[in-house]
Image (cartoon, rainbow, N blue to C red; front, side, top):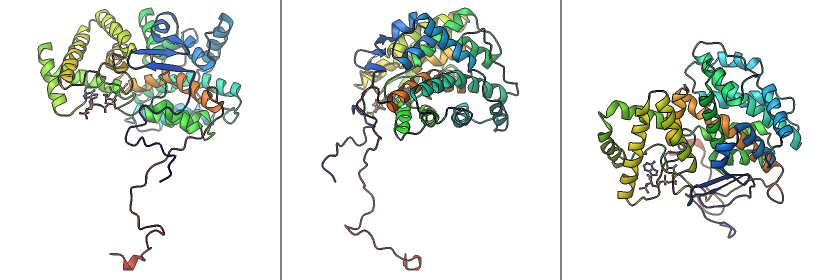
Length: 398
Ligand SMILES: CC(C)(COP(=O)(O)OP(=O)(O)OC[C@H]1O[C@@H](n2cnc3c(N)ncnc32)[C@H](O)[C@@H]1OP(=O)(O)O)[C@@H](O)C(=O)NCCC(=O)NCCS
Protein backbone atom coordinates (compact mmCIF):
# COMPACT_ATOMS: atom_id res chain seq x y z
CA UNK A 1 0.00 0.00 0.00
CA UNK A 2 1.09 3.59 -0.69
CA UNK A 3 3.24 5.07 2.05
CA UNK A 4 1.39 8.41 2.17
CA UNK A 5 -1.51 6.66 3.91
CA UNK A 6 -2.34 7.80 7.43
CA UNK A 7 -4.00 4.81 9.05
CA UNK A 8 -7.01 5.72 11.14
CA UNK A 9 -9.08 2.62 10.47
CA UNK A 10 -12.04 1.69 12.68
CA UNK A 11 -11.87 4.99 14.54
CA UNK A 12 -14.73 6.73 12.74
CA UNK A 13 -12.13 9.42 11.97
CA UNK A 14 -12.03 10.42 15.68
CA UNK A 15 -9.24 12.92 16.24
CA UNK A 16 -8.55 13.35 12.50
CA UNK A 17 -8.69 16.95 11.32
CA UNK A 18 -10.07 16.96 7.77
CA UNK A 19 -10.65 20.68 7.22
CA UNK A 20 -10.48 24.12 8.80
CA UNK A 21 -13.69 25.85 9.83
CA UNK A 22 -14.62 29.28 11.18
CA UNK A 23 -18.16 28.27 12.08
CA UNK A 24 -18.06 26.52 15.44
CA UNK A 25 -15.67 25.10 18.00
CA UNK A 26 -15.94 22.51 20.75
CA UNK A 27 -13.61 21.92 23.68
CA UNK A 28 -14.73 18.43 24.67
CA UNK A 29 -12.64 18.28 27.82
CA UNK A 30 -13.93 21.57 29.24
CA UNK A 31 -17.47 21.32 27.85
CA UNK A 32 -17.28 24.48 25.73
CA UNK A 33 -19.25 25.13 22.54
CA UNK A 34 -18.78 28.29 20.48
CA UNK A 35 -20.54 29.55 17.33
CA UNK A 36 -18.47 32.07 15.35
CA UNK A 37 -16.65 33.08 18.55
CA UNK A 38 -19.70 33.31 20.85
CA UNK A 39 -20.30 30.92 23.79
CA UNK A 40 -23.47 28.83 23.51
CA UNK A 41 -24.60 29.86 27.00
CA UNK A 42 -24.58 33.53 25.98
CA UNK A 43 -26.37 32.90 22.68
CA UNK A 44 -29.02 30.79 24.48
CA UNK A 45 -29.59 33.58 26.96
CA UNK A 46 -29.38 36.65 24.76
CA UNK A 47 -29.80 35.72 21.11
CA UNK A 48 -32.65 34.25 19.05
CA UNK A 49 -32.61 31.43 16.52
CA UNK A 50 -33.02 33.92 13.66
CA UNK A 51 -30.04 35.93 14.87
CA UNK A 52 -28.01 32.75 15.44
CA UNK A 53 -28.81 31.48 11.94
CA UNK A 54 -27.72 34.84 10.52
CA UNK A 55 -24.52 34.64 12.57
CA UNK A 56 -23.72 31.14 11.33
CA UNK A 57 -24.35 32.04 7.69
CA UNK A 58 -22.69 35.45 7.64
CA UNK A 59 -20.00 35.26 10.32
CA UNK A 60 -21.09 38.32 12.33
CA UNK A 61 -23.98 39.36 14.57
CA UNK A 62 -26.46 41.37 12.50
CA UNK A 63 -27.19 45.06 12.92
CA UNK A 64 -30.88 45.95 13.19
CA UNK A 65 -31.49 46.46 9.46
CA UNK A 66 -29.76 43.15 8.65
CA UNK A 67 -31.82 41.07 11.09
CA UNK A 68 -35.06 42.78 10.01
CA UNK A 69 -34.31 41.93 6.39
CA UNK A 70 -33.26 38.37 7.25
CA UNK A 71 -36.40 37.70 9.30
CA UNK A 72 -38.58 39.20 6.57
CA UNK A 73 -36.94 36.94 3.97
CA UNK A 74 -37.53 33.86 6.14
CA UNK A 75 -41.18 34.77 6.78
CA UNK A 76 -41.76 35.38 3.05
CA UNK A 77 -40.23 31.99 2.18
CA UNK A 78 -42.31 29.92 4.65
CA UNK A 79 -44.90 28.76 2.12
CA UNK A 80 -43.93 25.34 0.69
CA UNK A 81 -44.43 24.57 -3.03
CA UNK A 82 -48.08 23.59 -3.61
CA UNK A 83 -47.25 20.11 -4.96
CA UNK A 84 -45.50 19.04 -1.75
CA UNK A 85 -48.68 18.55 0.34
CA UNK A 86 -50.04 16.46 -2.57
CA UNK A 87 -46.91 14.30 -2.53
CA UNK A 88 -47.18 13.98 1.24
CA UNK A 89 -50.81 12.96 0.98
CA UNK A 90 -49.83 10.09 -1.33
CA UNK A 91 -47.31 8.57 1.13
CA UNK A 92 -48.06 5.66 3.47
CA UNK A 93 -49.31 7.20 6.72
CA UNK A 94 -46.85 5.19 8.82
CA UNK A 95 -43.78 6.57 6.98
CA UNK A 96 -41.22 7.85 9.45
CA UNK A 97 -41.14 11.69 9.63
CA UNK A 98 -37.35 11.73 9.17
CA UNK A 99 -37.58 9.58 6.03
CA UNK A 100 -40.33 11.82 4.73
CA UNK A 101 -38.28 14.93 5.42
CA UNK A 102 -35.30 13.41 3.66
CA UNK A 103 -37.46 12.62 0.60
CA UNK A 104 -38.81 16.16 0.49
CA UNK A 105 -35.48 18.02 0.42
CA UNK A 106 -34.82 17.23 -3.29
CA UNK A 107 -38.44 18.23 -4.00
CA UNK A 108 -37.85 21.60 -2.37
CA UNK A 109 -34.74 21.80 -4.55
CA UNK A 110 -36.66 20.94 -7.71
CA UNK A 111 -38.94 23.91 -7.02
CA UNK A 112 -36.04 26.29 -6.34
CA UNK A 113 -35.41 28.59 -9.30
CA UNK A 114 -31.83 29.11 -8.15
CA UNK A 115 -30.99 25.42 -7.67
CA UNK A 116 -27.99 25.55 -9.99
CA UNK A 117 -26.94 29.14 -9.32
CA UNK A 118 -23.67 28.58 -7.52
CA UNK A 119 -22.94 32.17 -6.51
CA UNK A 120 -22.50 32.75 -2.78
CA UNK A 121 -25.48 35.13 -2.74
CA UNK A 122 -27.76 32.51 -4.32
CA UNK A 123 -26.55 29.89 -1.83
CA UNK A 124 -27.41 32.19 1.07
CA UNK A 125 -30.88 32.72 -0.44
CA UNK A 126 -31.29 28.93 -0.78
CA UNK A 127 -30.24 28.56 2.86
CA UNK A 128 -32.91 31.09 3.88
CA UNK A 129 -35.55 29.14 1.95
CA UNK A 130 -34.45 25.87 3.55
CA UNK A 131 -34.48 27.40 7.05
CA UNK A 132 -38.02 28.67 6.34
CA UNK A 133 -39.41 25.54 4.66
CA UNK A 134 -37.96 22.55 6.51
CA UNK A 135 -40.19 23.33 9.54
CA UNK A 136 -43.21 23.69 7.26
CA UNK A 137 -42.60 20.27 5.68
CA UNK A 138 -42.22 18.61 9.10
CA UNK A 139 -45.43 20.23 10.36
CA UNK A 140 -47.36 19.44 7.16
CA UNK A 141 -46.44 15.74 7.26
CA UNK A 142 -47.43 15.43 10.91
CA UNK A 143 -50.86 16.85 10.16
CA UNK A 144 -51.41 14.93 6.93
CA UNK A 145 -50.51 11.58 8.50
CA UNK A 146 -53.05 12.33 11.24
CA UNK A 147 -55.78 13.07 8.70
CA UNK A 148 -55.58 16.86 9.24
CA UNK A 149 -55.05 19.62 6.70
CA UNK A 150 -51.67 21.40 6.80
CA UNK A 151 -51.95 24.86 8.34
CA UNK A 152 -50.74 27.98 6.52
CA UNK A 153 -47.87 29.85 8.16
CA UNK A 154 -48.80 32.81 10.37
CA UNK A 155 -46.68 35.78 9.32
CA UNK A 156 -47.32 37.52 12.66
CA UNK A 157 -45.57 34.72 14.57
CA UNK A 158 -41.81 34.46 15.02
CA UNK A 159 -40.02 31.41 13.62
CA UNK A 160 -40.21 29.06 16.63
CA UNK A 161 -43.79 29.93 17.56
CA UNK A 162 -44.92 29.60 13.95
CA UNK A 163 -43.57 26.04 13.77
CA UNK A 164 -45.41 24.99 16.94
CA UNK A 165 -48.57 26.58 15.52
CA UNK A 166 -48.24 24.83 12.15
CA UNK A 167 -47.52 21.53 13.91
CA UNK A 168 -50.16 21.51 16.64
CA UNK A 169 -52.73 24.12 15.59
CA UNK A 170 -52.20 25.86 18.95
CA UNK A 171 -50.39 29.15 19.38
CA UNK A 172 -47.81 28.57 22.13
CA UNK A 173 -47.61 30.88 25.11
CA UNK A 174 -44.68 33.26 25.37
CA UNK A 175 -42.60 31.03 27.68
CA UNK A 176 -42.96 27.88 25.56
CA UNK A 177 -42.27 29.79 22.33
CA UNK A 178 -39.16 31.32 23.90
CA UNK A 179 -37.96 27.95 25.24
CA UNK A 180 -38.43 26.34 21.84
CA UNK A 181 -36.46 29.16 20.24
CA UNK A 182 -33.65 28.50 22.75
CA UNK A 183 -33.74 24.78 21.78
CA UNK A 184 -33.25 25.82 18.16
CA UNK A 185 -30.26 27.99 19.13
CA UNK A 186 -28.72 25.07 21.07
CA UNK A 187 -28.99 22.62 18.18
CA UNK A 188 -27.98 24.96 15.36
CA UNK A 189 -24.40 23.80 14.87
CA UNK A 190 -21.84 21.40 16.27
CA UNK A 191 -18.65 21.40 14.16
CA UNK A 192 -17.90 18.27 12.11
CA UNK A 193 -20.57 15.92 13.46
CA UNK A 194 -21.69 13.05 11.20
CA UNK A 195 -24.50 14.94 9.43
CA UNK A 196 -22.49 18.12 8.87
CA UNK A 197 -19.61 16.09 7.53
CA UNK A 198 -22.07 14.29 5.23
CA UNK A 199 -23.32 17.66 3.90
CA UNK A 200 -19.78 18.91 3.34
CA UNK A 201 -18.61 15.68 1.77
CA UNK A 202 -21.48 15.72 -0.74
CA UNK A 203 -21.03 19.35 -1.78
CA UNK A 204 -17.26 18.86 -2.08
CA UNK A 205 -18.20 17.16 -5.38
CA UNK A 206 -19.78 20.51 -6.43
CA UNK A 207 -23.24 19.02 -5.92
CA UNK A 208 -25.86 21.66 -5.02
CA UNK A 209 -26.94 22.63 -1.52
CA UNK A 210 -30.10 20.49 -1.56
CA UNK A 211 -28.07 17.36 -2.36
CA UNK A 212 -25.82 18.11 0.62
CA UNK A 213 -28.76 18.72 2.96
CA UNK A 214 -30.46 15.48 1.84
CA UNK A 215 -27.35 13.58 2.95
CA UNK A 216 -27.30 15.53 6.21
CA UNK A 217 -30.89 14.58 7.02
CA UNK A 218 -30.08 10.93 6.32
CA UNK A 219 -27.08 10.98 8.65
CA UNK A 220 -29.04 12.77 11.37
CA UNK A 221 -31.75 10.08 11.29
CA UNK A 222 -29.43 7.47 12.83
CA UNK A 223 -29.99 6.55 16.50
CA UNK A 224 -26.35 7.31 17.36
CA UNK A 225 -26.77 10.88 16.12
CA UNK A 226 -30.02 12.89 15.99
CA UNK A 227 -32.20 9.84 16.61
CA UNK A 228 -31.09 9.73 20.23
CA UNK A 229 -33.54 12.37 21.51
CA UNK A 230 -36.57 10.26 20.50
CA UNK A 231 -34.91 7.20 21.98
CA UNK A 232 -34.39 9.00 25.29
CA UNK A 233 -38.11 9.71 25.34
CA UNK A 234 -38.90 6.06 24.60
CA UNK A 235 -36.45 5.08 27.36
CA UNK A 236 -38.21 7.44 29.78
CA UNK A 237 -41.62 5.97 28.98
CA UNK A 238 -40.16 2.47 29.38
CA UNK A 239 -38.75 3.41 32.79
CA UNK A 240 -42.11 4.90 33.79
CA UNK A 241 -43.88 1.68 32.91
CA UNK A 242 -41.31 -0.66 34.46
CA UNK A 243 -40.29 0.87 37.78
CA UNK A 244 -42.50 1.41 40.81
CA UNK A 245 -40.52 4.36 42.17
CA UNK A 246 -37.31 6.34 41.72
CA UNK A 247 -35.60 3.94 44.11
CA UNK A 248 -35.77 1.21 41.42
CA UNK A 249 -33.89 3.29 38.85
CA UNK A 250 -30.29 2.38 39.81
CA UNK A 251 -31.22 -1.31 39.39
CA UNK A 252 -32.85 -0.59 36.03
CA UNK A 253 -29.74 1.28 34.83
CA UNK A 254 -27.43 -1.46 36.11
CA UNK A 255 -29.37 -4.17 34.23
CA UNK A 256 -29.30 -2.17 31.00
CA UNK A 257 -25.56 -1.58 31.09
CA UNK A 258 -24.90 -5.15 32.26
CA UNK A 259 -26.83 -6.39 29.19
CA UNK A 260 -24.59 -4.29 26.95
CA UNK A 261 -27.38 -1.81 26.14
CA UNK A 262 -26.77 1.92 25.79
CA UNK A 263 -28.33 4.51 28.08
CA UNK A 264 -29.63 6.93 25.50
CA UNK A 265 -28.61 10.58 25.87
CA UNK A 266 -25.36 9.71 27.62
CA UNK A 267 -21.86 9.64 26.21
CA UNK A 268 -20.47 11.71 23.40
CA UNK A 269 -17.86 11.32 20.71
CA UNK A 270 -16.30 14.69 21.59
CA UNK A 271 -17.49 15.83 25.04
CA UNK A 272 -15.75 14.07 27.85
CA UNK A 273 -17.70 16.07 30.41
CA UNK A 274 -21.30 17.33 30.54
CA UNK A 275 -22.45 18.76 27.22
CA UNK A 276 -23.00 22.52 27.87
CA UNK A 277 -26.33 22.31 26.04
CA UNK A 278 -27.55 19.58 28.40
CA UNK A 279 -27.16 21.95 31.38
CA UNK A 280 -29.50 24.50 29.75
CA UNK A 281 -32.01 21.84 28.73
CA UNK A 282 -31.96 20.32 32.21
CA UNK A 283 -33.14 23.60 33.73
CA UNK A 284 -35.79 23.91 31.00
CA UNK A 285 -37.01 20.35 31.55
CA UNK A 286 -37.45 21.03 35.27
CA UNK A 287 -39.21 24.37 34.75
CA UNK A 288 -41.56 23.19 32.02
CA UNK A 289 -42.26 19.96 33.94
CA UNK A 290 -43.43 22.04 36.92
CA UNK A 291 -45.46 24.38 34.69
CA UNK A 292 -47.27 21.48 33.05
CA UNK A 293 -47.63 19.30 36.15
CA UNK A 294 -45.27 16.61 34.80
CA UNK A 295 -42.37 16.82 37.27
CA UNK A 296 -42.05 13.04 37.32
CA UNK A 297 -40.18 12.95 34.03
CA UNK A 298 -37.55 15.36 35.31
CA UNK A 299 -37.22 13.39 38.53
CA UNK A 300 -36.77 10.12 36.64
CA UNK A 301 -34.25 11.67 34.27
CA UNK A 302 -32.12 13.09 37.08
CA UNK A 303 -32.25 9.68 38.79
CA UNK A 304 -31.11 7.97 35.55
CA UNK A 305 -28.35 10.56 35.17
CA UNK A 306 -27.10 10.02 38.72
CA UNK A 307 -27.34 6.21 38.53
CA UNK A 308 -25.69 6.23 35.08
CA UNK A 309 -22.69 8.20 36.34
CA UNK A 310 -22.24 5.80 39.26
CA UNK A 311 -22.63 2.76 37.02
CA UNK A 312 -20.14 4.01 34.43
CA UNK A 313 -17.66 5.12 37.08
CA UNK A 314 -17.80 1.68 38.68
CA UNK A 315 -16.76 0.36 35.26
CA UNK A 316 -13.87 2.80 34.98
CA UNK A 317 -15.66 5.00 32.41
CA UNK A 318 -15.54 8.34 34.12
CA UNK A 319 -16.23 10.49 31.10
CA UNK A 320 -19.66 9.30 29.99
CA UNK A 321 -21.92 12.23 30.82
CA UNK A 322 -25.28 13.54 29.65
CA UNK A 323 -25.45 14.95 26.13
CA UNK A 324 -27.85 17.35 24.39
CA UNK A 325 -30.44 14.62 23.81
CA UNK A 326 -30.85 13.56 27.42
CA UNK A 327 -33.23 16.33 28.48
CA UNK A 328 -34.44 17.56 25.08
CA UNK A 329 -36.85 14.63 24.59
CA UNK A 330 -38.83 15.53 27.72
CA UNK A 331 -38.77 19.24 26.82
CA UNK A 332 -40.14 18.58 23.33
CA UNK A 333 -42.78 16.21 24.65
CA UNK A 334 -43.96 18.85 27.12
CA UNK A 335 -44.27 21.23 24.14
CA UNK A 336 -46.63 18.80 22.38
CA UNK A 337 -44.06 17.48 19.91
CA UNK A 338 -44.64 13.77 19.11
CA UNK A 339 -41.71 11.47 19.83
CA UNK A 340 -41.01 10.61 16.20
CA UNK A 341 -40.99 14.31 15.28
CA UNK A 342 -38.17 15.07 17.74
CA UNK A 343 -35.38 14.22 15.32
CA UNK A 344 -36.97 16.30 12.51
CA UNK A 345 -37.09 19.13 15.06
CA UNK A 346 -33.33 18.72 15.44
CA UNK A 347 -33.12 19.14 11.64
CA UNK A 348 -35.26 22.31 11.79
CA UNK A 349 -32.48 23.89 13.79
CA UNK A 350 -29.41 22.16 12.32
CA UNK A 351 -30.41 23.20 8.81
CA UNK A 352 -28.84 26.57 9.65
CA UNK A 353 -25.49 24.99 10.56
CA UNK A 354 -25.59 22.60 7.60
CA UNK A 355 -26.12 25.47 5.18
CA UNK A 356 -23.36 27.54 6.77
CA UNK A 357 -20.97 24.59 6.44
CA UNK A 358 -22.05 23.92 2.86
CA UNK A 359 -21.29 27.53 1.95
CA UNK A 360 -17.96 27.42 3.79
CA UNK A 361 -17.07 24.21 1.94
CA UNK A 362 -18.18 25.43 -1.49
CA UNK A 363 -16.38 28.75 -1.25
CA UNK A 364 -13.34 27.49 0.70
CA UNK A 365 -13.97 30.22 3.27
CA UNK A 366 -11.70 28.68 5.88
CA UNK A 367 -9.02 27.12 3.74
CA UNK A 368 -7.01 27.85 0.62
CA UNK A 369 -9.10 26.03 -1.97
CA UNK A 370 -11.98 23.57 -2.14
CA UNK A 371 -11.01 19.89 -1.91
CA UNK A 372 -12.94 16.82 -3.04
CA UNK A 373 -13.12 14.43 -0.07
CA UNK A 374 -11.62 11.14 -1.16
CA UNK A 375 -10.32 8.92 1.65
CA UNK A 376 -8.77 5.51 1.13
CA UNK A 377 -9.84 2.08 2.29
CA UNK A 378 -7.55 -0.87 2.71
CA UNK A 379 -8.65 -3.78 0.52
CA UNK A 380 -8.90 -6.89 2.70
CA UNK A 381 -11.00 -8.96 0.26
CA UNK A 382 -10.22 -11.88 -2.04
CA UNK A 383 -6.91 -11.49 -3.91
CA UNK A 384 -5.06 -13.85 -6.26
CA UNK A 385 -1.82 -12.00 -6.78
CA UNK A 386 -0.73 -9.19 -9.08
CA UNK A 387 -2.66 -10.29 -12.17
CA UNK A 388 -5.92 -10.99 -10.32
CA UNK A 389 -8.10 -14.12 -10.12
CA UNK A 390 -8.88 -16.27 -13.17
CA UNK A 391 -12.47 -15.74 -14.32
CA UNK A 392 -14.24 -19.13 -14.27
CA UNK A 393 -17.15 -19.66 -16.70
CA UNK A 394 -20.43 -20.43 -14.87
CA UNK A 395 -20.47 -24.15 -15.76
CA UNK A 396 -16.97 -24.77 -14.41
CA UNK A 397 -17.54 -23.05 -11.04
CA UNK A 398 -18.21 -25.21 -8.08
C1 LIG B 1 -22.54 8.90 21.38
C2 LIG B 1 -21.71 7.65 21.41
C3 LIG B 1 -21.89 6.89 20.10
C4 LIG B 1 -20.24 8.08 21.55
O1 LIG B 1 -19.51 6.98 21.40
P1 LIG B 1 -17.92 6.88 21.43
O2 LIG B 1 -17.26 8.09 21.92
O3 LIG B 1 -17.51 6.36 20.12
O4 LIG B 1 -17.72 5.85 22.51
P2 LIG B 1 -18.12 4.34 22.38
O5 LIG B 1 -19.46 4.13 21.80
O6 LIG B 1 -16.97 3.63 21.75
O7 LIG B 1 -18.16 3.98 23.91
C5 LIG B 1 -17.03 3.71 24.73
C6 LIG B 1 -17.48 2.72 25.75
O8 LIG B 1 -18.48 3.32 26.59
C7 LIG B 1 -19.71 2.65 26.48
N1 LIG B 1 -20.77 3.63 26.36
C8 LIG B 1 -20.71 4.84 25.73
N2 LIG B 1 -21.88 5.46 25.83
C9 LIG B 1 -22.68 4.64 26.53
C10 LIG B 1 -24.03 4.74 26.91
N3 LIG B 1 -24.78 5.81 26.62
N4 LIG B 1 -24.58 3.70 27.59
C11 LIG B 1 -23.85 2.60 27.88
N5 LIG B 1 -22.56 2.46 27.54
C12 LIG B 1 -21.98 3.47 26.86
C13 LIG B 1 -19.62 1.85 25.19
O9 LIG B 1 -20.44 0.70 25.22
C14 LIG B 1 -18.15 1.49 25.13
O10 LIG B 1 -17.94 0.42 26.01
P3 LIG B 1 -16.78 -0.68 25.70
O11 LIG B 1 -15.50 0.11 25.65
O12 LIG B 1 -16.87 -1.59 26.86
O13 LIG B 1 -17.15 -1.30 24.39
C15 LIG B 1 -22.09 6.74 22.59
O14 LIG B 1 -21.78 7.37 23.80
C16 LIG B 1 -23.55 6.34 22.55
O15 LIG B 1 -23.93 5.42 21.83
N6 LIG B 1 -24.44 7.05 23.33
C17 LIG B 1 -25.84 6.76 23.32
C18 LIG B 1 -26.52 7.38 22.11
C19 LIG B 1 -26.62 8.90 22.19
O16 LIG B 1 -27.00 9.45 23.20
N7 LIG B 1 -26.27 9.55 21.08
C20 LIG B 1 -26.36 10.99 20.96
C21 LIG B 1 -25.02 11.60 20.78
S1 LIG B 1 -25.17 13.37 20.79
